[in-house]
Image 1 (spheres, rainbow, N blue to C red):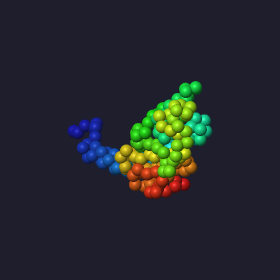
Image 2 (image 1 turned 90 degrees about the horizontal axis):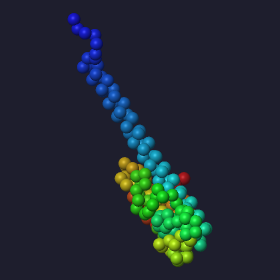
Image 3 (image 1 turned 120 degrees about the horizontal axis):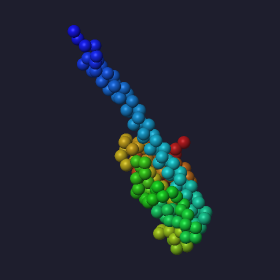
Image 4 (image 1 turned 90 degrees about the vertical axis):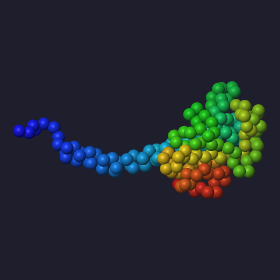
Amino acid sequence: MRGTRGFTLLELMIVVAIAGILAAVAIPGLIRGRISALESASLASLRTINSAQSTYASSCGRGGYAQTIADLQKPVVTSGLQFISPDVPANGVIRNGYIMNLSADEGAVVVTPSPLTCNLATMPAVSAYFAEAHPVATGISGRRAFATNTRASIFWNQTGAIIAPGMADANVLQ
């Protein structure tokens, strides 16, 4: 007489097949969700740079903008406060699957020499800035590249390629 305890091989194979089908359906959705979250985080970082640049220009750069993230990180000499959070410490740093960079925009001119800024920046404050974020691995950490400039508009391209100053290969994000 056969025991009634346990599962047959056929029952186990059916359970494994069902689990495989569920995983095949769920995993692409999870990947898309992860990519959307990383893209949203990079957009938030660019908006943070816009805000920090606005504060820097009005209170430290005498109307000029910082040329690097490191200059936004430098504390004000008198108060020790920084213009941007330490989680984005310098150009070229990977943050949430995206590489962030800040530089002078096309046609920018020097507004304030670096020794005259309130945080003794390493580079002079300029009339216009450009910030960009592109995915470390297109399709894995993100599908789109993003950029912003002095106007604080966010631009994007679908290829994930680096957006150059001037935004010639980018569209305004709506």
